[in-house]
Image 1 (spheres, rainbow, N blue to C red):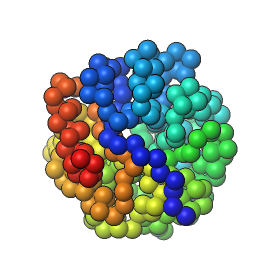
Image 2 (image 1 turned 90 degrees about the vertical axis):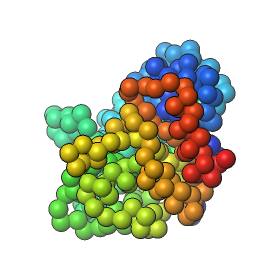
Image 3 (image 1 turned 135 degrees about the vertical axis):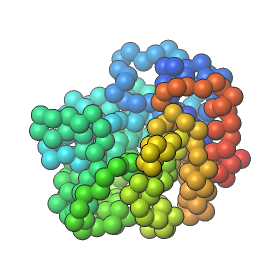
Length: 269
């Protein structure tokens, strides 16, 4: 069954350092890093934005692929943010960040095995019961792939969406990074993904260092990532496309040019 998609347009990741930029450029929607904000103490600039356009909480710490159940306080925080902001959906990643008492500080890829998928599905279903809005899950960039995969990435994601009803947040920059570093054909992967479950799309910049492509979120979006966005848009209508930029912030003119390029590649001109 196709996902019920809300038209979002072209957005920019909201950061405190970009509050004035967001006010000036007025993107169609914004996304916040959920762990960086408290629902009872939202910054006034963000409150103004939330009164004008959709604000989507994006979490990084649920660890949905971890062996342990997701911590209730993390789910409660995400749910409270969604309600405080009137968000139409929330998101996190297809990954794990903790194992036992160890926290990696990074988004770690999951083995594409039946057992790992069962754990992920169980955690997603549990979390969905405590969220007031739909949950979208994002594919991550990785520098390693676990051996002995039993499913392709597309098969893994399709079964995840079918068994949980979750939406997909497709990061085309991550697809590009993984193809560069791990191999594979990202265009073929787009053909196989369950794009009928598409919630929105991420794009971001990166850079190659010593033969490794790094998804930095601090550089302009490279042409091959925009090409992947065009390819996606020929296969499914992206309800929204969001630019992530997390440090070394440029001036408004750079952001305006990046958003215009994204709008053109996504067919939202």
